Length: 466
Image (tube, rainbow, N blue to C red):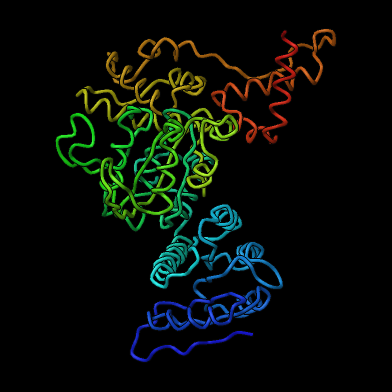
């Protein structure tokens, strides 16, 4: 049964929210708080009632639900809403510190989460973000397909993997959940982070990027959290850390897997409590940052090997965004090559306007282990050497010029020259692992295997070589 709370007269209605919780007192309190803040609230005490109401009422803008419900839990309710009313974002309520449940809810389709005990002001912020997300989605659905495929900031691409990436970035840009950006070195992970910031609600606030692998271990805590005068030798004055520099905006931790193990508990606490304590100080300072992290390493393997804390892994890995390697992007190679060529020609003040068909073929054949960064450097190299309006083969770096096809083929009709299927499987698995830069988690995902199955196969191949 749906219970409605009458709106306060004289207030403009922000939106219509459906609260779902089996505790009627909590529902009534939340409805009252939200009504005072300009919402038109209603509430149900079971998942079944909530779903029935959503299916019969097109006016609900956002759902706020607990994860523990009679007649079906909140996870299942999230999945059912995604299937039947994907236009309605879901914000879940979960016990404080239970980030595993929050992650599971996000993966089940929830848009955001708030922790119990509930604070009405934080609920208001989460619901407003969810409502903005809903309205943005409605606007995007009205755009033509061509408009929806426009590049996301500085990120260019028309290939299916990039269209999927753009769609994911659009859906995530207004969310404040932690995002882990995966991808090989040079694939554009920082560009993705900057695009998420630029298209989000914090766009006017600072974007602070830090390469964790470049932080000296002895100074890493000070760099992140700041220090006060006299905290250590050469600390001649107070200094803000990167968390405070990014306050109100976005903090991008590149190569998060390189954070020293001893510092990881302090980083986890800063993320969970949203506060930092500068080195040498007893003062606690609140911080509000959107966290984006990136890595080209296998963090799951690092957790298994004890080099990365599992609780920190779950905290930063609420949602994954995977940036495809350049070799998986097809003709995007030529699109990007043209962009980089034009920029290089302008920078070097040379009248180079394109490249030959032979050059295009080599660009498509080459595997690009350095990804987009390597392609950009290749075009800089070629423009520098070019003597004509078109880049020719001799202008390319030697490694690109010598690229050969690497397709796996069955050659010959003689049955004695063919090999067993197991050998073909081994060759292909090893080839995919090589293409993924040795990242077993990514390779397993590409192959459609679970990670343990891939590990067993690789161990068998290694034993065969002994």
